[in-house]
Amino acid sequence: MTHDRPLAMVTGGSSGIGLELARELAGRGHDVAISGQSGRVHDSAKELEALGVDAYPFQADASTYDGVEAFWTFVADLGRPVEVACLNVGIGVGGAGFADTDLADEFRMIAINCTGLVHTAKRVTHAMLAQGRGRILIVSSISASTPTPYETVYGPTKAFGFSFAESLREELRGSGITVTALLPGATDSEFHANAGMGNTRFGDNSWKNDKRLVGRQGIDALFAGDDHVVGGDEATKQAFLDNRATSEPEKAARQGAQARPAG
Image (cartoon, rainbow, N blue to C red; front, side):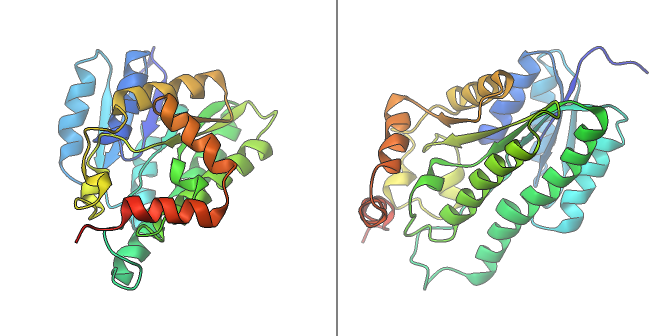
């Protein structure tokens, strides 16, 4: 069977920024394979198919080797070149100080945000090198540019993702493969609620960036071949620039005041 549309894959594509990335790709004529941990991924695939493309949902636990490998095998078994890979899956753990958070939760976050990222990127890189082309988007966070008290492990996992994207981009220069990092600011998704931060400033979505805007900015940057893009409004972009010019203790104090649980 021949396919007229290019194939993209989006990890964590069943909700939030991941679903918006998938929508953007579908709107630009890509069939999309998406992964998600819950059955919601199948409903999201139906939403994407309503845009006139084929969508391939896969439910798996991204915190495990087998879950990550199973999604890649699912995509590879489609028998089509992967033209775009958005490595988006990620979770947070916050809402309490490091002494009070659960170690198992933090190990799971590291497995998803770091280990799973490397695992998927390894498979995607090999496949794209074999075909001589491709575009990779790695979703990090503006948290990569600051200490993150009360999300003490989350921020370092996102700093890892940003540095990883920059390093891989340079290695693949001239190969026909581009790597772009997306660094969203606070976004109106379920992320902070799921991270246990509902009783902090980040529990209120009313002031956050529109996830549709962030998704569009990410895909625009991907197709432009940009090094990285900050996802959000002008204030968010300025905050990233300010972070780069501010001392680590100052940033830690500011972030701690925003993320510290109420009461």
